[in-house]
Image (cartoon, rainbow, N blue to C red; front, side, top):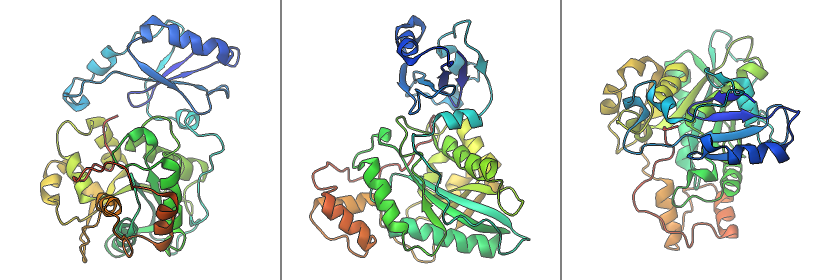
Length: 351
């Protein structure tokens, strides 16, 4: 049974010859895995890529970037002799193993050809809670598309909202099903090639942003062959407040930062309360891959503010699409939950 390392996560694959009824108890009873939590993959019963994910224990006060490259692996149990450790990145097989049952990648608005063949194709991915999604989230995509058209050689051929899964455990986080549905309602009338991908939201465990971007790269470039004969650039779309956290110690792992900002890149929208220059000063090695988008019109609205309004039985009209507001009212969302007054992190970079 091969044991594959995927961004601090081990995936154990079950050979077709071993039925789940035997394989699952064997994992649970293995003393070498006693200090680790594990969870079944969604398609565990489908050989040969079925398996279990074993999460290594964490040291909360020390980031992986502050530890030597050999230390994290020393915390893990020694694999049994019949396990084989593969030391490469997020392979197509490992991404396929994480595919939820019945999942289909959304591509109805994905453009197959460039309007200008001289440009390079770009897809923007916003990862976050979206609890609830609101107009500022949608405006980010329009601003980024305008910026890409006027300030770069990129042409946006698609854009995606990728809500986090329920495993994120953030205060005020509505169920993944509800958040995906609200996002779908929000983009229904969008003029941008904006879509909602539920792959991340359907995961049983938290998925780091780096792996989410790998998923998009796999779907767009590996399975669909890019756009117009060119490889598509996949980039993270985020607010400046998120990028601020990337420049702070003990939040994002060095490996994830290298993968997100070095391999993919980011389009960053200005936020009134953020100090982007300070954040960028700590990310100088990635500055050529970070595109800063000034906000011509500043809007401080956030999902946290909307939840506070709803908890106080106040209107959120004109802050969210009408369909989203109707869905919230019909399903009684955000009425009785405790909501922190401080803005929570939309995503986290530790893996």
